[in-house]
Length: 215
Image 1 (cartoon, rainbow, N blue to C red):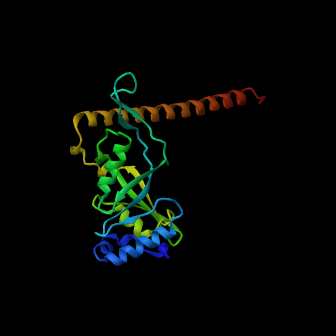
Image 2 (tube, rainbow, N blue to C red):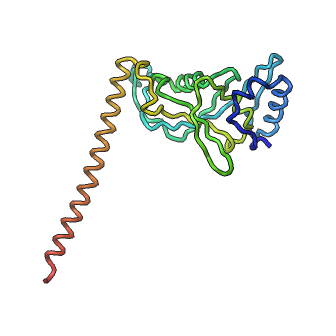
Image 3 (cartoon, rainbow, N blue to C red):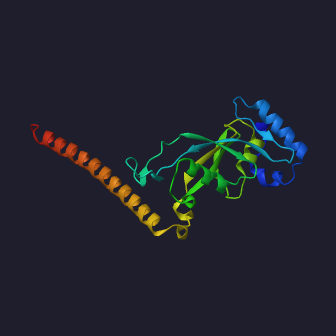
């Protein structure tokens, strides 16, 4: 069964599969698929298909607008977390290209270096999430794992702060990132202040109540 295939062996398998083995996997994938997103194999051995990517972005993205009469030239907003987007790609497309295609689909102005593609897969009733390298091929992983998204799914996230290549960003991008961090810091400070003000009010009310009781 496709669920028993170890999707961790992508690099090893990709370099050893023959055309006939790929054809068999594509045929099996299409038989097992319960939707219209089938894979197509050409005589040259190239194949195309669809992948779904879940958006799990915690920070706002900067979107390019039309500029005239409507959306500003650039506007930051939050994408709904958990939304699923479908891409049609080929087996030659890398993780880097998939990230760029997703950003282009949403007209995102942010540098692709801010984002990373992760694979989520199950093994022995446990769910794992692993960051993909930029040179891996998502459609091959999809083919090997089969169409079941419980076996393998893809998630777009921000890079961890320590993994971001800051020298890849322009000065305006870095300034925008600082503004976002400052807003998040201010929001956190306001939230903490409200919480402690609520505690203080409750304590003061409890002290008044206790003071009014007969000794």
